[in-house]
Image 1 (cartoon, helix red, strand yellow):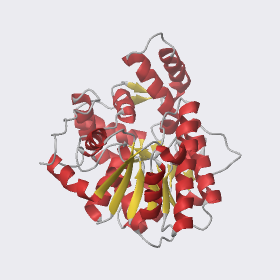
Image 2: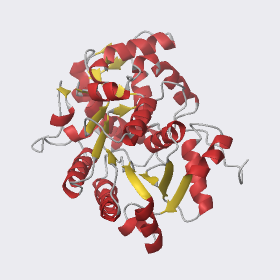
Image 3: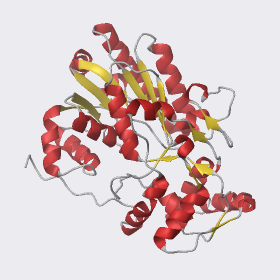
Image 4: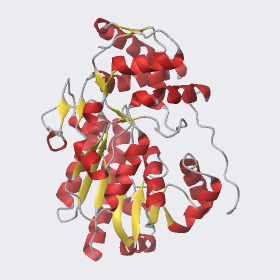
Amino acid sequence: MALFLTGATGYLGSYATYFLLKQTQQRLTLLVRAHDETSAREKLWKSLQLHGSEREFHEALSRIDVVYGDITYPYLGLAPEDYQRVVQTTESILHIAASLNRLSEQSCLNTNLRGSLNVIQLARAVEEHHGLRRFSHVSTVAVAGKRSSETIAEDTAIDWQRADYDPYGRTKKFCEHMARELLPSVPLTFFRPSIVMGDSRFAPTTQFDMVQTFCSLANLPILPFARESRVDIVNADFVGKAIATLHMRDHLPHSIYHLSSGKSSKTMGEIVEALATHLGRRPAKFLPELQGSFQTILRGLRALPGRNSVTRLGALLQVFLPYITYNTVFENERVCHDLGTSPVAFTEYCGRLYDYATSVDFSFPYQPLTTGPL
């Protein structure tokens, strides 16, 4: 029997896949948007090369079955015989695939809502056929909606009367609701990462949107934020290990886990000082009274004609600014206790991350896959 996983070619999906391959002997069925074995293998290699050598990748393929499809299509875009084979061989489901496009309502509705519904329908078919051990969904702390200076527990995060920052948080909140309503007898686990940025073990990363935002702010002499504002940043290796480890357990004491830094989250001042020390600079000055003017500038940058590095930076900063400035953290005692470890403080590795991201100009130097096993 196999674990059916969506989103393996994405950033968090690659981490979950890596830890599943490293920590377990579980066979994996991966849904990949591809038309043939060659293109699917190339996409997987592009995702997993951050985590190991090509030799290790080829060795891992012996435990991986790939099905070619798309979560936004009925029956996941699979041929009837392939869909039935997945139903018959699936032991658990780990749903990670999602649209993180916080500016596109259409993309979030199509991928997050319609896509998740199709994955849930697969879960219902597996449950009816022979039972489903667990359905895990990677959600986000953004389901908590608009917040200010709060510490939020898992079970009270969702408030349907509260406005959302963007369509990403809004659709992910409803995805959780769909799973609860449509899979009432299946053990459910909801993983809610906070701001996932960087790896505490090594400098390279393949995800640069938030990193570029962080690096751009780090280069400003004045920051329009409060020095005491906390930013809940968590290392990707902690998140990936938590998802893989907890999903594989037969019994969990909780159904919701914040994958976050929680009350150990660092303040803006601590992060700025750590990076300034690493770079040998004077720390930036904090002038929170300029935040309104800063947001106006960002809207102006985003509205400039054409698409270039300036308009992209304006869009990135405008999208992520609420999550940087709302001074809110998400309790993580559950995951730390059940996993037996805690996240690494962002201040311990932010310098290495900055050096790497700027040295590669925010673009991972992917290596092509050698034809055939080594």
